Length: 445
Image 1 (cartoon, rainbow, N blue to C red):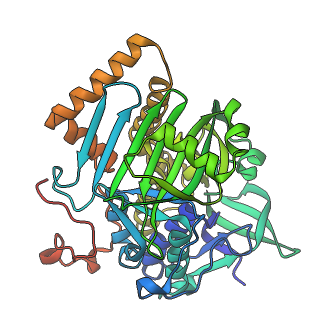
Image 2: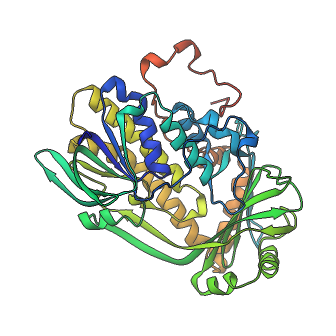
Image 3: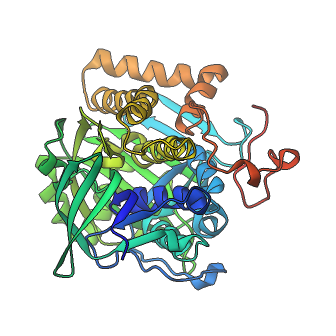
């Protein structure tokens, strides 16, 4: 077993698996040796080849992610979108409102000349699609997958990061030019290595569940601000003739036990009263899951031979739905830097190169962090002047096409340059801007 790797990725979740997918496309050409370490025996059920919609039936209780238009374009470059799109739901309209106030803003894909403003995918399907893609990749032999496995220690020695890992009771040592930590916001390895970060508790929890309604959602996503926190309602694919939506309900810590303690009928009644009837009448609810909300940003994202990505680098409030989209843009940028460095014969653990990567990501990170944080604080206050200001802002945004386009493009992940993750020999210049009907498309930009 090869114990010398160019890149070792800690965490085979959606972020880590996306990075592996990006690097595998170039692994054979650049002679890259990659290792993927995952503590869970099988985070997703990999190995399936779903070719038709009916091959997959999702769980009613699955968590979901809102993918921006830009994220869909990245998955398109990774040759994952065609399979992934079999089980995604388009967001064609976004409706933002402030309960009890006049402020409201509406966005539509048609106005922005795009096929969809975004897409909603259940995490189980996204995870299975990514790992199935990796398992079937023609360069799969360039990847060593340690699962289940955990990192016992990590040290920088003689220009390499030396990792001692435990895999099914066996301790082995591997070396890498670069360790990528994609193991989430509760990364024990980050704690062990002493990476500093700032953390602010929002004193809120997110309650997640899937809901069944008595009517179709019409591809509309809602963000409804209330005096106790925002409620997001995302359209899901129809399953067994059920009209489904994914709920993200932000609750003050003091209300969590009360709401969680309600039986299903009382819960649906309470939610209906808070959200209203825009999506229709709630007639079914899946398992409810709660988790605490906090802002967490690593103040040190790189060291020589080590880089943090995803929630290990930044954990956001879900109010704007940008956490995974920001992480995926970071993964795409990191992959670009690593591919370029490898092609130039540079060490993938080179601190100057990794620092350049972080510098290039700062503006996007700060904008996403500030937007989600400031929006949460602005829409969580009952101060009359601030409430008036935010409602005037929503109304002005709604009637100003130019401002709405800027806002929409930011929400769609199109404010930053789109990465190019394809090798030059795989791009036909005459067809570079042609997209088939299964791919996200845009015109007019």
